[in-house]
Amino acid sequence: MCWSRLCALILILLIGGCSAADTPRARFDDYLARLARVLDTAVPPAQAPPPAAYPAKRALTRIVDTPRTGWIGLFELRRCGLVNLISKRNSILGRVAPPQRRLAYESRLLGGLQRCRTEIDADTALHARLNALIARKRASLPAVFWNATFADDALIGLFSLAGEANGLDPHTAGGPTRRALAGLAGAGEALSAARPLDADRLGDYYRTLESSEHGGALLQAAHAATGALERATRMLEARLARRPLCFEQRPNRRARVLQTVLLEIYGQRVQPYLSTLVRAGRDWRRAVGSLIAAQHVTIPPPFARYVRATLTGKDTAWTRLDAAIDAHTAVWQAALGQCGLMPGAAPAGQRASRGPSS
Image (cartoon, rainbow, N blue to C red; front, side, top):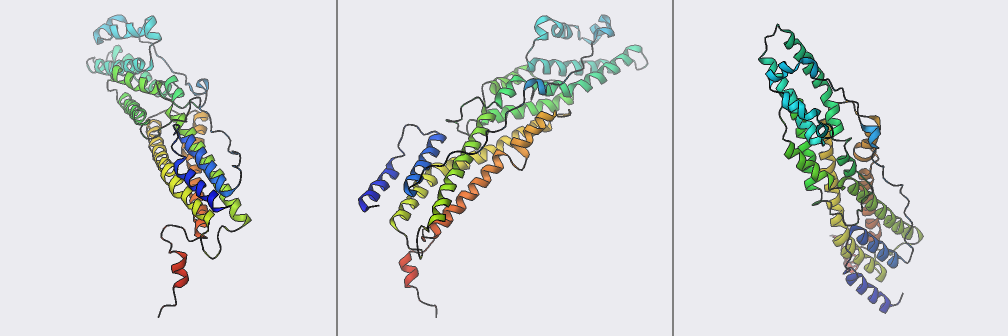
């Protein structure tokens, strides 16, 4: 490769990133293309299988025991001040109410039944019926809350892989979503404690989740980043396996161009995105884990498998991303280490001129 061609290549490497498209995918494509050009090779094809899909709703929905209040009697319900609440729930609109209304209703009903019980003589038949109804209601709440969260359309959409991750900003995009998940986790604990829930506030959480595909997009982003890093690592490893990049740690022109790719492209455009993505993944797993911890129901096996495959297992998109970053760092160290171009390395002239210490 002649000197003029190398100079032109360095110039392209420095100014070629000023493209209007600055999505994560564009950054990785640009990085791979530049690396392949310097190494005089082709970008290897992607090999990783697609990420795991979220389970279907029918596989997640739990059967809910819905004890009727009518057998207590209209007169007794009026004494408890619950007639209007129950009538609204049993209306046509009440039966198709969104999850935030269902959760708020269950919290108010349970709280009302418990208050009513304290006002009824303990040796009456009504007190015994209230005890039985409260016990059944309490037993049904875990399934109600599960269906309103991980089996609800809002969260199914949140984990969807149908969205496009090209323009994902993993740090800022996830903030409202993580806060909404934390709000639902708090609602689950409040529901278990029979504290009233605010339907309007819950509605804000659901609207945030309904408008986001952050979970699925984040998973795709981790998957895409891992694949790009693995392909870049394979290119560098293949080049080093064919022939050393430098001899006697003396940098040549190709090595200096490669160093430019590391510092100007990977270091300034790819690595900051990877750091943000790793942090966002950690925050995301913590937020989802909090909502899982707020569940008091036996987790359906399809969901448990999904969680292991994407969030908590030893072979998730996040563990593979960590491994890909480590492997890519190591191969860069090996490549530039041959040439004495790693940060902190002494210039070749200085190393050659050093005599033995006295």
